[in-house]
Image (tube, rainbow, N blue to C red; front, top):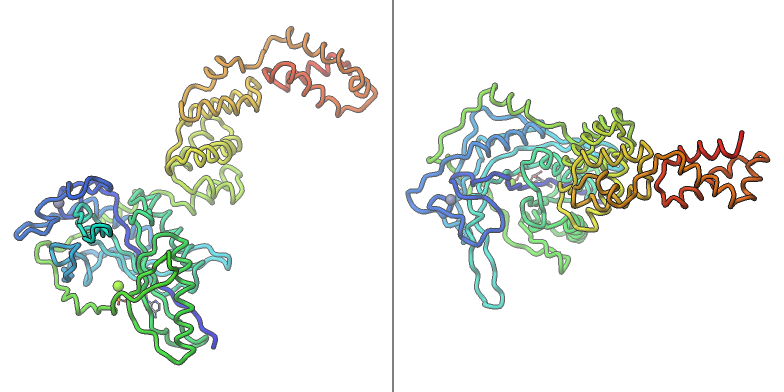
Length: 476
Ligand code: ADP
Ligand code: MG
Ligand code: ZN
């Protein structure tokens, strides 16, 4: 039997706000357990939530970035469940009037552009974190994460393979990073992806029964989980058995998923409107002000870079992978008036050293002013290109003035024509054979003679100047 795969995603993203969604506790990651808590986020009776305005702003910006419709009167709902990571025994979420509905994201795959529709997007609070201490045979809880703002993005079941899923998630991730709404780290849990997947016979009108897979901590895990679940369902179906709608937990070490629980229905949670929070009123003017603050996103930036700076699609893509890099490039290009060289330094040496030193995303340890100055020194023939690389190595990390570094190292080109002419004369003397060849018409040996002169000068000269002096001295 020939089966086709259908995939829909539920993506949770932790918003990068200073404080939690309903209290003033810090939402920062990595603090000592249970030091960022208060009566609200630990669910003490009588404590009342107060909504963090910044959460609504960031979530609305994300909704607009996904071309969603923003609900004029979004409300919060109470989702009741018992689980030890949540002392409140309910989660404040949104069901009946979520912040955003509809929308889409166009993503690039090898088969061309693909539109993935968004079903809805809502705000909610995160739960605490259970830590299973296997050696001590007990489980402890850290409530620092309880109340950290989350948004959940639910797609329509529009994807059909791992490539489309990866392309969607990458595009989504870049949008969120460009908005600076989250750091979107799968491995730290600031972005969490649940994969809903079903199979149906090729050509069938109705979709099959789906399962939902959780605990996917990397793009690799997502790809492997999809392959494994496709195979598992195909085997069941080909034996005439049924797929059970359930939640499964992916084990990336064992490379298999195991059933966690049957899929609950919304009914089981006894959702009801959150009595402690009034509905929001988002007027059009406010929504438009959020819209006008949206940044230029990666895809648009790539197109503009290609046109404005005459870069290849590949180069523009590399420079725009991180917004900070794209901004840095534009600043350097403007200051140096040499976009090509700015692109080369950033894509080559900068990325190489960043990788080598394991620098975090967004960090470039020198300023655009200094890179621009280095480019100008090279362009003006004051600093030879291999010496420029050495200066760059020192500049990287120290952010010292490249001219100062070059000066200190004695790398700057001699502009003293008389002394350069002396060296040129020496080279002519020492190389009778090439000189003869040159004089009898083989002009390309000039390059060799320039090289010899530069070598003698330890690179401290402008090759264009040396070329001129050589031609003068060689006659004609
Ligand atoms: P629930 O309300 O039970 O969570 P939803 O209708 O909200 O179910 O769908 C949850 C996710 O499952 C969505 O991402 C959706 O795209 C996806 N989905 C729904 N039906 C299917 C299906 N037959 N196959 C694969 N994914 C599906
Ligand atoms: Mg759901
Ligand atoms: Zn708190």
